[in-house]
Amino acid sequence: MTESPLRPTDIVELNPRYLFRWEEPQQAYILLYPEGLIKLNATAGEILGTVATGARAVNEIVAQFTATYQDADVAKDVMEFLETSYDKGWIRIKS
Amino acid sequence: MTKVGSELRVDGQGLPLWLLLELTYKCPLKCPWCNNPLDFDRYRDELSTAEWKDVLRQGRKLGAVQLGFSGGEPMLRRDLEELVAEANQMGYYTNLITSGMGLTPERLGALKDAGLKQIQLSLQAWDAELNNRLVGVNCYSQKLAAARAAKALGFPMVLNIPTSRHNIDQATDLLAFAEELGIEYVEFANLQYYNWAYLNRFDLLPSREQLERAEAVVQATRERLGSRMTIYFVITDYYDERPKACMKGWGNIHLTIAPDGSALPCQEARVIPGLEFPNVREHDLGWIWHESPVFRKFRGEEWMREPCRSCPERAKDYGGCRCQAFLLTGDAANPDPVCSKSPHHHLITEAVAAAMAKRSDGRLIMRERGLNLN
Image: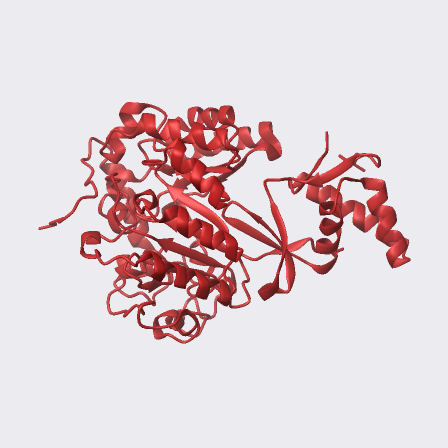
């Protein structure tokens, strides 16, 4: 297993290069960037929405979703999505 | 979580997500690969500020979200800042697509205040002599100054390099410049051969070896810089075996409005004769997008012929480019001859051979008014 680029205590925030917002005609959250856009599914939108609301630590975000959904698998899914978002440059570690 | 997100670029659910405004065909540059029509000078009756604002309103209502201000050179419109401000308020992601001419620090500041999101700046070469020769005017130092000024204001940027045999060997230097400035996106725009580029294609097409060398440079830079820089490098389709998914399909997500208000499924669509493009001065955008015969003509798969009609890849590439099919085979409904399954594929391989045979000092036909090909 490869090592995660994110530590539990890392504070993450949206990369200001991206614009994250609800898009009514698409009924979805979208990420906008120079000459492109990505439509997020409901869960992905919810997670990035949490990141967008303020500087939160990775473990806080994971704990919040685990509590909301009462499901042990959620922690792994949320973590994987945060790692993907980090790799893609959508979110970054707050310095 | 199985899927992170879907690329809206592929599925817009029938909405014109991408609205491109060609504010003017006027431009101080004379690029011999310009994608404006050969008779660009005929289209003088540009939409007014109020008419463009109306297009913006209607486009947003239809679901457009990415907005390009293009041309010609959009900086030549004095109302650009006003249009950007209006679009920004409506919720568009505003992109400026410019040569950098006229992009002064003053206007950059005004564009920033208006809410402009990003700037795509073209640069043709890493030395002044070649850059200026390729575009026919002295503009190199202005382009570099514009890039630095835009970055100083914190704009995210796309450095667009119209890529041909003349400049492709400078990939290393161009990438180093982008890295030094902190430019986030670099696009090696391997030329697509329509309009002016088609006229000059034998003198623009790079060799396969040039492409492979540049691609190796791009790959090494990607590995070194990671997510700091995104580099787009799309191979010239003349060297491909399968066509590009042109515009992600005709009338699928792209809507271009030409300076005179004509609505086009893509910037090049005027090369196809016999199509009557609806105009925003006469029709509302909803009718144009959903109902007009031109936008329905090659939408979906109904229009396809064999071998596209039964091809398992038809949903991936939409049969390629209609304009290229017309330009090379004389019929826009034919498969894109780039595809090796096309009965016309030999036209592509012959064009490549002709271009390679002519690798000397071919004179480029510069974009100018009143072109007379006879």
